[in-house]
Length: 268
Image 1 (cartoon, rainbow, N blue to C red):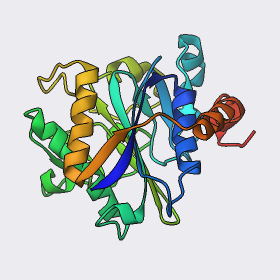
Image 2 (image 1 turned 135 degrees about the vertical axis):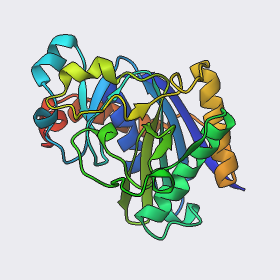
Image 3 (image 1 turned 180 degrees about the vertical axis):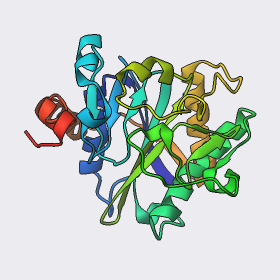
């Protein structure tokens, strides 16, 4: 069995979370490093915008500032996400660590399959969007809000999207992160969206709405177990290395702590 590092950082502030994700990617050597599964949360709640997104086009930034809600930029694409009561994962691996990773779609399918196992273990009938859409359903429609649209390998339950996942590919390296919503917090976020699409709340769901209420620590354990079983790997708990810690601290101060990067994508 391939050994993977299991890095559980617990809940962190938005800038720190994005700094750790990037530090893990920067220090990953596809030829020599152990692949990584990171588990984390968000405290306090935060918005994240996609790598190429203009934050002010999707959010009332002055309202976010007044409410003390951080806005951070992800290293992956897609639309804005409100992170509140959720479990979040990140994967950093080489293409050789995934048996079917010829392209983005194949690796995305391989790296979201563990979520289907996780939800199934909780008694939830979940599937990929491509397998559950009605004949007239539309997939892949670009929207400024992540939960407003569905991609082929988004996870749906009871006809609604649950969580979101995004991937970035470098040479021989795959980075992917995604969320498992414990409860639907979108109603809290609506006042901050410039143009929330109709039916946004009706199109998304969460564990609580599906009848699952469990301790987050227990759910993290079940999520890690589903990952290990789905990919047939051995997860070894491990902290961030000293180098990863130092890089994440530097990125947190120089990039993710700066409005120039978070709001406009400009390197300070």
